[in-house]
Image (tube, rainbow, N blue to C red; front, side, top):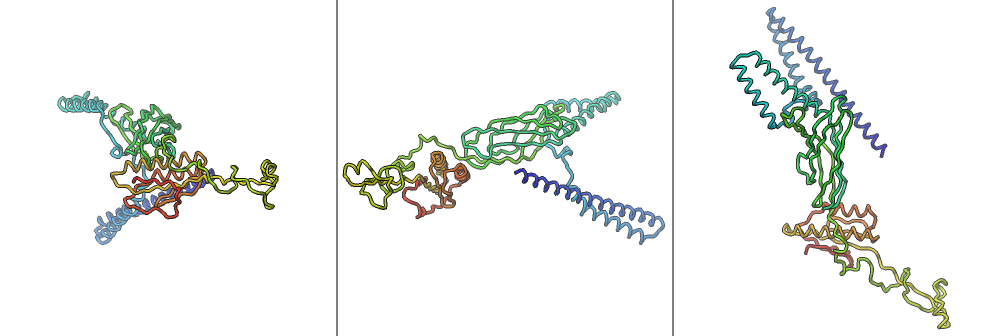
Length: 409
């Protein structure tokens, strides 16, 4: 695992190095071409003063062509490697109540300064505008070089709580980040309550732990989180989206074992089997044959009958269950289908915990036979994502009569 991480890290570093070399190559080429274009423009101006119209026109066309070529070929490549987050219009701003009061005061000072032509009012206006600029600068610094990580379990069960860990890493060398409120940008199904960080110091990280609950099964990805802050003066509520990579697969709700109706099926193998086998229960006593093992001689019966008797044992009941899930259901039967999926997951869960080999079969998927935790996770993951089908498929003929049939109808 560590070697794989090192290889991935090396590949990322190599990709960054190649990208940086390509950026510097494009930058150097564009500077060289623009220098040639500038020399051509200067020569065109000099030739025009000397009345050399052909040389002047040729030089001007050459300078214009080089400039257009640089704008088309090199400028987009250089712009793709630039971080544009510092531009104010790329962030999400919302003026707060305090901000509207402040802007109202600025407007009053503007009209008073224009009407009275008082230098003191102009100085006050300059100070007020400087506070706005300082607010924008500090707000931009507050959002710079932040990394957000969301940790949720890879899987959970519907209706059960699970921990959520949110971590904010401040990668700035000197400045701390203040008053950070984190929430979801788009609804993902996970009830993620807003997290609030008072301060994240430079070159450090802070984390908080919350609790989440998923009501229904399915896949729940979280790709973006938004950080909101009113720092520094509370005039604006600034927001910025940060990419995260978190996903949780919610398994169906597990029904308690005492609520499952299993009386119609011999799932646990409690019924007797009247077959010979290599079990431990006595099947019958018969006359001894030379091919029989001496260990199986029944000495009491032999003493009573004065002839050697041997014991035969009954075969153990097979501890194997096949579950067949019929996905056929109409749109009006969606709730019934969800209960059916939960019932199938509960059967697989409880039977596997009892050490019974479980096999799940549908019209488009079939699991292996096993009773391990990994085998159970495979079944639960399929049931977490399975969808109902509007087409009825016949039951496979290879299913035995003891298979547990699960269908809406």
